[in-house]
Amino acid sequence: MALDWMNFDYTAHGGQGHSDGGGFGKADLNEMLRLNYTPNQIKILANLAPSQGVKVYKPVQKYAESVAKPPWMYGKYGDAAFGMADVKAAQKMPGVSYQTIKDYAKFATDQGIGVHQGAKDWLTNNDPVKLGANKTPLIAPTYDSTQVGDPGLGIKDIDKMQSQGFTPAQIRIATNTASDKGVKVHSGASDWVKENTEKLPWQYGAHGGTDFGMKDVKAAEATPGVNYQTIKDYADFATETGIGVAPKAKDWIANNDPVKLGADKSPGGDWTTFDYDAVGGPGIGVKDIDKMQSEGYSAPQIRILSNTASDKGVKVHSGASDWVKENTEKPPWQYGAHGAEHFGIADIDAALSQGADYNTIKGYADFATETGIGVGSTAGGWIANNDPAVLGANKTPPMPEIPDIKFPGTQTGAHNVSGYNALGIRSPRPEGWDLNTGGTTAAFGRKKKPKDTVNALSINPLT
Image 1 (cartoon, rainbow, N blue to C red):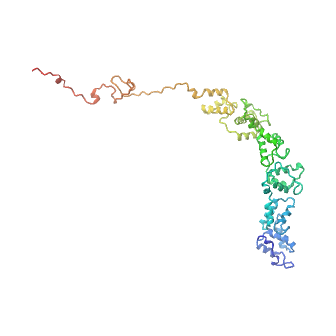
Image 2 (cartoon, rainbow, N blue to C red):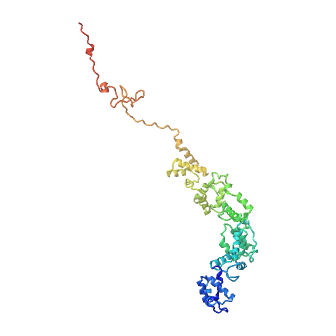
């Protein structure tokens, strides 16, 4: 239907009550419905008809009144479609932003009212988010709220801020701190902030300037549950969103990292005597963990102190508990659960009762040494004196038992010992022939042919 819907001929259907035979009556309404006019199109034409000298009859009036009021006065500025005259009129109205005007145009499109090309071009070229997209976010910006719209901070000011590259976080801070500067924040701006920004991690602007400075650092340090990492996160957020970080705050962050401060330190053998009341409130909190790290405590040491604190009547706050869960690993043994926090003889007794062997126990002790937990002198002595390798180093292993194997005989005369002859050479014989006492008949299975000794020795008689 495009924009032709506005050119309806009221004289073609009934001609009631008009000087030229026209009028907007029941027959015209039926024809519009037949032609698929939308309810809003019919309502707009009914509103425009009197200004065009066309009488609107009761059936049409009743129908128009039943249609919900549209968001904009379509047809009041120019023709019935949404055009530049509507845009300019909307811009002058308090509380109307670019997004509001865009919504008016969208409604006109959805309901078949139509949008003129000029208004379409304006919407394309004036999106404040796009206008500010390629601009470098201002650091700790100051905004003049009298630039556009009424005095105070309104929805038109937010459009202006966005077009200048202000981030949502910066806009939120500007509205949060406006009252401190005597600037009124109008409801449209307040509603926009609620709908289009998220709660910030810190009260930027509540302590000094709108950027993150040393006053913010001091205020954060005094806040329960806030440690170095939290303050660093506040500063990182300020950098990423254009809020900005003051030079002194940057220096503080660079010089107060507890991990770096404790990198070359060790709490020594008395590490279990940490003063939990030295920083923050009573108990173990994240501020105590910062202090431990700055003094060179290892992650396993901090975990053990957290695990054993309740046994000493020391409360572990949720922040410290969360830190332990996120930043430490479960150790190989329950250090501190059997006597003192270091690895002692009570731990060895407990490990032995659980079936641990020497190497496993030594592994527990090695871990304690490597992570600063420490090994008690008695436990150290046990490990030194119970090493299986050391215990067996000076012992001669027993000779293996040689079985008494009886071998066949090997020589004439006495029986052989263990089947060997005097020279150690095994001389096996057939079974049952261990001595050569059976003669040749037994040995070879045949008898010697007897010599004819009589004839051989006979002397021829003298003749």
